[in-house]
Image 1 (spheres, helix red, strand yellow):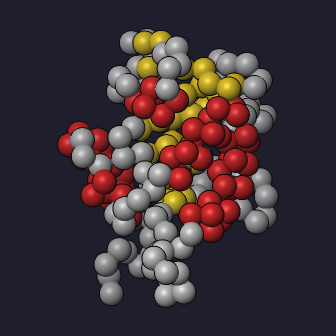
Image 2 (image 1 turned 45 degrees about the vertical axis):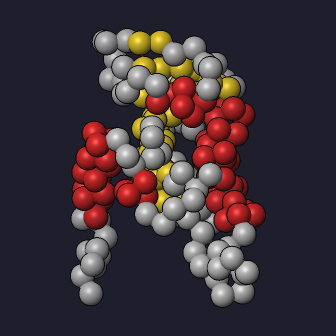
Image 3 (image 1 turned 180 degrees about the vertical axis):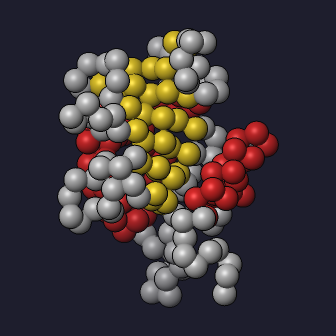
Length: 176
């Protein structure tokens, strides 16, 4: 599954990583004439993104009281991952829909809280978060993320995000 990570300002702290406030999309492998299958080897794709992903997940923390958030948009789940209300080696994974956390992290203890911004929450070891998201990268197998989202409500939500962030692109999408 392809996923998109949306991060808040000051998330990346290295010059070789995207600037603060960046929206990063990990896309399926592009075709290459040199490859027998016409696609880049998965190792090539993973090596390009894994250090960024691992560093990003490990970097979610509070600095000077500022909370950093990572949104993960998968074909079948929407997650928010934060360092809040958890131990130093854990992350709090939040979801708006029942089952989204379990689809990515398996059999974890998920709590439900109607007084919180996200209805579902689970504390997950940071290393498990890295492993789970890496597995999602390894399963990318289609050319268009929006078309891979089969759930109508989730697709509509993602399309709204796509439209909103298209306004930060200059020139706009499909402008020539």
